Image (cartoon, rainbow over all chains, first blue to last red; front, side, top):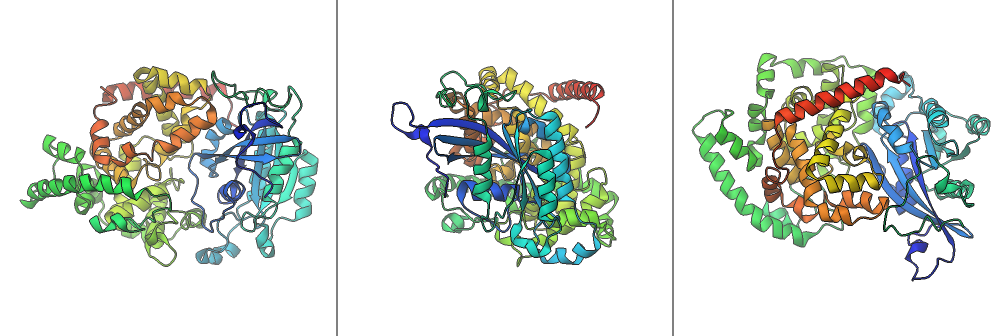
Length: 232
Length: 338
């Protein structure tokens, strides 16, 4: 794995050998597209066929080592149901990165649940891709102007049931300046990669990154100056 | 209950994780079993004379000390308005289940069935609680179109099923919670929830000003910490026995109990919270304090919720709710909806 949980801050005293940058990242997207599963795969290397529905939001951290920089992600994994929408700004405010997730089968929900099969044909499919586009629009309007947005077409292991074409999503991502990958939390495909791609794209020069985004959290008294020495 | 001390599954069917602290739990149970035995006797005397449970000071005191699990379904129905509601339309639940159902609601509810308590043996695909949960949630979604289905209700209905072992009782208890006991937590705009989080923030500010200031300084909004506490009524947050003891009081005394629990958690862990010096450690701290020994020792915890927060009158809550609801309406009038 390209990730390293210990992080540079664990080194014995003295200046860290590499720059350490701390970034706030938020996951957004329709319910049951796999936001929590992507985080669980990235942070713990695990996958649960049935991931508990997230209420409010869950907070996790994970560290990624690049060549000369250690990037520590503070990850906010949010609830997907539309009515939790009004709480979302609290999570993307001050975020330097966002992963907007949809389900390439466009359904949302556990594709393997037997009872669902009856309805998948008759029902108008839940438009998880359309919902993802709305999140992108909202982020472009309301979040920090420098936010790095990645689009993740999750459940790529269910390609047989694909409803959103790769090229369509890629074209949309290109038009909007988004990173784009199809991912599978189940097989781990592209999961570390999408976080790494974000880490690479985040500005790590002085005055950028943690400092530039409006509302980026400030260091409190006594906090280890990990981020303030970052990127110099 | 004693035999489950060493089981990898607890008495409600939840698998104990690898990091489950058997030693602390054993210590807790060795004390709590005596409490349970003594309470069981008292309740047997109270209910043994064939009297129905009335809302009296004695019953209130008994409820605060915990309802024995076998009496929970009937006592919860009696001390809340659920029984009255059921008496007014006794066939309601069955009638709704006769259908028809809206496919959109069916799809919404079914998506969450396998995602509710996946580590509980009664909620696996092979067990039957997923079907019961579907029935309770779909019935409620059709009965209350304003609420429909809100994520979080799955955990409440799921725990009601585990505690009452009855779909219909769970349906009525869910209905009384959403419609009589709690403000509008689960409606499309979740206004009641957002207001209650503001109310809590204000209460913490007056009852533990240093903690409030510290949490604000580190940039963690109270809503981030407490959304799940309110939405799930502490299910999936606190240890299960503690949650059920809170619900005992919630059914009798109403939503004020939630504030008592929140403030107790915050004040009991004041030193820990104040020792966090960055955002990450504070977020981790709030995850830890709902799982620590003081949260597990439900009897002492429930005693402390009536002492630690100090005075908390209904009129204070009503006033604060009105104030923040008004603020919210004014704010919404200024900002056009997204």
